[in-house]
Amino acid sequence: MDMHKIVVAVTGASGSVYAALLLKKLLLLRNQVSHVGLLLSKNAKAVWQHELGNTDFEAFDSSGMIKLYDKYDFSAPFASGSGQYQTMLVVPCSMGALGRIANGISDDLVSRAADVILKERRRLILAVRETPYNLIHLKNMETVTLAGGIICPCTPSFYSVPKTIEEVAATVVDRLIDLAGLKQESYRWGGDSA
Image (tube, rainbow, N blue to C red; front, side, top):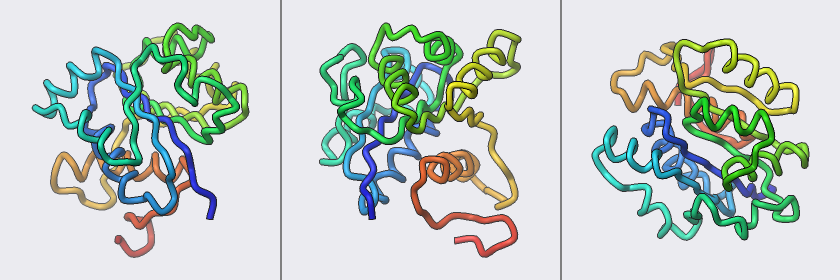
């Protein structure tokens, strides 16, 4: 089985629970993932602390599989196509980050890594988190989609009858894991829930 190298970027949009659950899930899938490059904007760290009441994003760096990079560290391996990262997930993705990515403005490592993923024709998944959308947001989503990216709004499903906020958020995270091409056991419509 091919091992995946993945970039996870967390922006300042509300929805830190999605990022936290995604990172925990990726650690459980270490038989498929060799390395995760993790980026958090300054606003992402503040929102995480406000919404989740902790700084657990720092602890992921000691996992041996996830490495935390500075938002302006252009020497990070995924700042170049030669780093061969197959997938990038921006979770949650703010409309500001979406706009910079859609318009090729590589002014930080988040937008540079996304630009690299798109130019190399690899998998870019933006878990956009905003409501409602204005026309600029929708045009930016269209641009990213036309460039080969995947827009996956942080819109939970309720088929699995989730009971907690984490279970609701996990319905989005499970979808992101599937879109990233990783194998997992999760609730499947019309099948057994695992």
